[in-house]
Length: 172
Image (cartoon, rainbow, N blue to C red; front, side):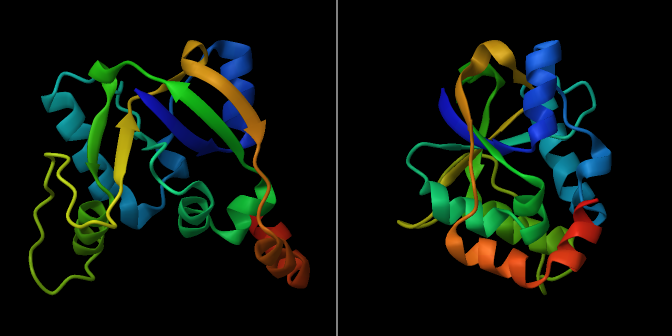
């Protein structure tokens, strides 16, 4: 499956040095943990072994790259640096879900939804503007078609420049 993902420089370094990368639970915000664990459990139910690691988030090429990146990444993430990786991952290791459905479920698991939200694992998109998201159990160097640094847009650069001390403290 042809996908793209945005990753920190140390992920690219790990792929180069070790040929593979497993995400670390320490990088998952605490309130995201229950939802991420549900993804890992669903992957396991489908025979996708993540070795206990959190999932790697990817998107299909139909997703708008810059818009998706800006929605997902904080100024701290951008200041730290991001790489865009084009992947060709084995279909058997992918779990495709609705981005809109995921956000509803994430809000529920974080306590922001007034009603119970069940995650729809079917991959069915909820609207014409919904996008598929894909999780992988790991990244492998032999799946990478190409990788390049992916800088923030001008507006994000300006926000970072306007508050460099706070950003540097959060990044460092």
